[in-house]
Length: 76
Image (cartoon, rainbow, N blue to C red; front, side, top):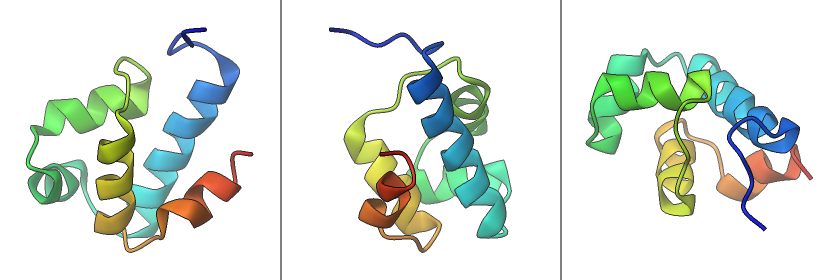
């Protein structure tokens, strides 16, 4: 079953990703450079306008110096 970007669980994921970036002290521009994407992509993810691929999530966590499994544990 597909999950909408407006589903509460997906919104929790997006909020956690934004919190990870802020906790790492990274700007959206710095994170986008680490991920090899545009700043607008990071912004859209954090605003809930874009789906996140699992590999992007893993790379996002690593750029924020957080183990992906620890980040996911907060959501399950």
